[in-house]
Figure 1 (cartoon, rainbow, N blue to C red):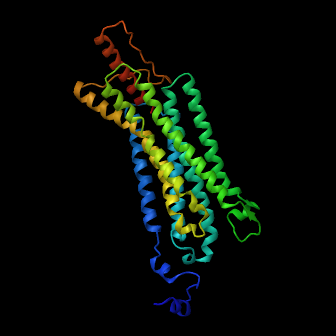
Figure 2 (tube, one colour):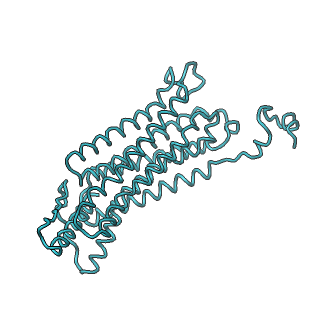
Figure 3 (cartoon, rainbow, N blue to C red):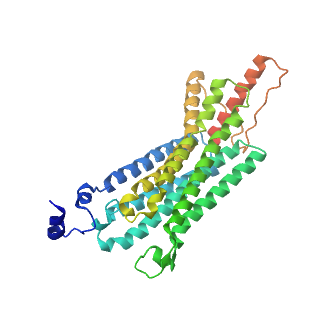
Length: 340
């Protein structure tokens, strides 16, 4: 069918090439599968983390509660995105019924807000976990990271609701008024997401500085440090999301903004999984030790907020230092079992 025939017979707008209509695709179903898969897998990791606490009769700590809250926020964002898909999100704007736009915008704003909250709280939970095995100036830096990430991401979430004057125009484009230049949201979004990604990398590196200074076998140190460094994947998600930020200025965001929405949910989901990995590693080692020794390993200071690590004195024999190093590893991992 030619372009002229499309315009005269089917009523296609002359400004839109007919080839574009032929190539259009509804990304809604694929997006629905992707976001629920991410939310579901992160729920499995979180449940395994909580299961470890339950079977060992350990109480939940602050980082556990914050992580649970972050998953609930991610779940709320996923539900809102699913509702938006039912209203037409994922399709080209001209394919969405006009009566759906008002509700679609409000649901979309709620989805973005919940996604950002999930990102901020999941990163906060992981930082609190690192805070438990740190001391001195390192604790001050971690608190700075927690506060700064929450402030930046929180302002980003709020900006979508107050970007227009009057505020009602933010979710009702038919209301007369003015809005910020879309480039403001893009620049700030890239900065906030990039900053949170850098903080993810820093929090992933910090455990190496703490653990590698202990006197224990290199293989054991690397295993523990790697388990606590899964935040690099959260950082990767944040950086990829930065590359999708320019889509905020798209004239057809309902279709072009799909990557940004998926990576927004993926960032929180990946962070939740990363924060749960250390517990899963420790659980596997604990189960192996229990089977091998036919007894349950003893938990050391389960409710103490600081891990007491013995630094071997150089004057002691190599055998004594290795024994103390193994004891350090046991204290560190068993303390994490009770608090992660």
